[in-house]
Structures are given as C-alpha cells and as structure tokens.
Image 1 (cartoon, rainbow, N blue to C red):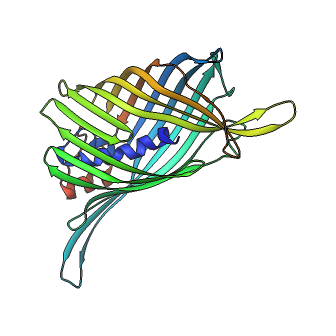
Image 2 (cartoon, helix red, strand yellow):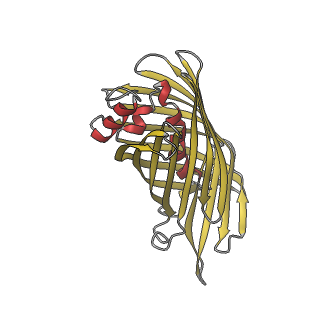
Image 3 (cartoon, rainbow, N blue to C red):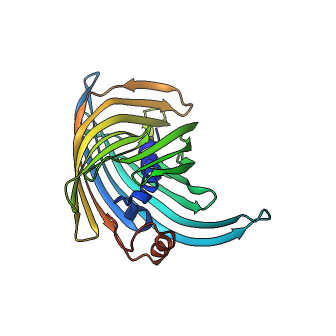
Length: 326
C-alpha cells in the first residue's frame, strides 16, 4: 500500500476545508513548516515462530512556492476573481521492520518523495485543491533500480457554515498497480472545545482543546508502506516487494511552544495488521498477520511566519491574520 506516503499530502485536503473556521491547521498550509517524527511499535508474534516489529523516523517539509491573484471577465460579462497558491511537499523517511528483533532487510527501507499542491479559490468555482507527487521506498541495494510510486488527485471544498466544511474528490495512485480511490473529508466544530475532522478512508480525528497552547487528539488512521528489497540465495539475486498495513487507534497530546514549535506525543494500538511479500511478477508469495501491538510516537513541527508569499495570499483572500494561526 502507498498509504503512508499518501496520508500526509491527502490530509491537506481536510486542512483546507478548515480555513473558514480559523482552525490551527491553517498555519500548516500557508506558512513554511518542517516536521521531524519518530514512531516505534515493538515486536509481536505473527506465527511460524516469528515476530514482527516496526520503527520509523521521518522528515516532512511544506514549502510555499508561488501565490498569484488575477481578475477575468468573460464574453458573457461574468466577473471572476481567482487566487492560486502553490506549495511543495517533500518527505524523507527511514523505515526499520524487524523479524525476530533483527532489522530485515539489514539496513531497512529509505523513502524519498516530492509533490506539488495547488490551492485555487475563485468567486465562480469556489475552493479546490489539486496535487501530484512521485517517490520511491527501497533498500540500499534497490535504491537505484526502484519501483517508483506516484499519486495525483483533486478535491472540491464546500463551506456549509462557519463551523462545518466538507471536501470530496478522487485520488489516483500507482504503486505496482493503478488504484482510483474516492475521498471524503469533513470538519465540524462541535463547540469551543471539541472538533471532529477526517479524511476517509485514511483518518478520523476528534480534537479537544484544553487552552491556547495545549490540546488532545483521539485518532483512528490507516497506515503502512510498500517497499522493494533484494532476495539473495546461493543461486541468484531477485527483486521482492513487501506490503505492510495496519489500523491505528491512538491519543496524542499537543503543545504549542515559543510561537513556532508544535510538540506532539502519541500512544495507542496497531491492529488489523497484515504483511505480504510479492515477487517481480506481482505474485503473492506469502501473507502474515502480526498480533495487535502498542506503539508510541513523537514529533516536533517548526512553523515559520516569515513567508511573504503566504502572507500576501492569506491577506488578499481574508483567510486569517498574518503569522501563526494555531
């Protein structure tokens, strides 16, 4: 599955739908930010006298590229004001699966990906987001002979009120085969302290705001990776593909510190776990189902407020005040 690499860009669809409600995620869209994250899931039995565990470290960056505003006037005498905001999304990760407490493959997997997002708002077409990206997840031995993945998609945002927004669209994914996935996002502020949001089928989040600098998330998410590795025997070397997926239920505590830092600690359970191995002909060589396991995660996000492009875009569209809107 390409889910782990897709969740980050696709979740931006939900973030955009929260703009009118002035949700904290606005700063993640319109201001440069960098996130460092680490996750750990200890080994759990998966049968055949084997256990499976997983750890991952990642770097994510969201970089505004260009903002523009233009006016058009059609032959039918229809006036339109259109604004576009372009962003680059970059990711680098190290994934270390363990079999019987030994990293397998020996140096784990490395992920590198880059994508571009365009937010478009106009009087006639309302609010849309489009995006696309390309990346690889491979071992050291296969990194320069990769099986790349790519994604592309678009979604329409509708503002149903000051505190309710929805998004719907389609994502096209290629990772060994092409998949067309319908997506539906929602954001609903229940009251001043509670908010529910999600991007189906990937994530659902209920947020409780304690005060200006501290809040708690209750999260359900679908996650995983698809990676290439080399299978070596005494006779030959052959390419293999490993697909892993799970559903996570967790609670995260988030603190906003020193204006530009967002620190998060997360803990929960991984369940509905599945590990499959394929050959180069995409034939399934085996399926394992590791037991339920706990996991912990921690992240630090740095959000800059010094982007002139972002400030210009948000000011012209009236999306929020300059600086961090956490």
